[in-house]
Image 1 (cartoon, one colour):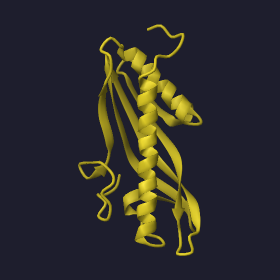
Image 2 (cartoon, helix red, strand yellow):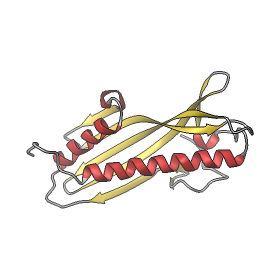
Image 3 (cartoon, helix red, strand yellow):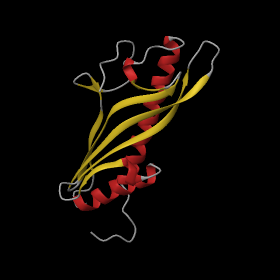
Length: 164
């Protein structure tokens, strides 16, 4: 977890923490179990190894929780040298008949300086300058919005050959 960003207001927040969340309503005839399997398939399609990503799954409750990583470039100095930063995050998906809720939270990143460091995004010092930090945070936001769009697309599409 990390504190509210003082120099950036691009992220949605809940109780001072970055939190992308939404309840999405679909056709009320789509059962919880089908949405659960759609979410599980999304994890498998989105991350290299869903087995490594999914931390908790409860079909009866309709809940999946995973910890994933995506890569964003971070400019480390005034000469424009960029290194990849692995941005970790938690995705929680809760399913019910005809709707689901997602939450994407707990963002931190790892980048190489003298050693690997795990740093909450909004507590990261502006290495290089504040403009570089803002560019990095804007790219993080764009990646999360891509994740959300892919989740919504997957949750709206029936799984072929699966009968619920």
